[in-house]
Image (cartoon, rainbow, N blue to C red; front, side, top):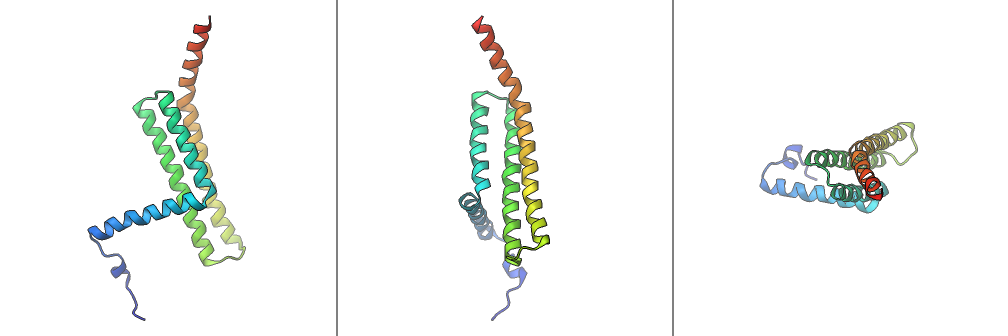
Length: 139
């Protein structure tokens, strides 16, 4: 069997560049199909985009919410990759495997919590404005 060098695998060029998008899409599709957390994050993303539209937030607030969304989705993909690599190495329940999987999950959890805090900071003033207008209109 011919041994393939890393240099052969990592050749550069437009074709390789285009193929890399396909590989990325494969990763997104896998995570969406098989990772329950990714589905939850996608649903949350749809909710955030809807709230952004309904609350008529500023371009800066759009940017901040998209950065938060991107970080959470990226963390979930990294967590999925960590879990796959750990499972590739061992399917046994091993303390180090548990640490790797738990820490990957915790990273996603921390970013999701921070995204929630960002949402509250951005949305609460808009919601309070709407409530204030409704209260004044009711008088």
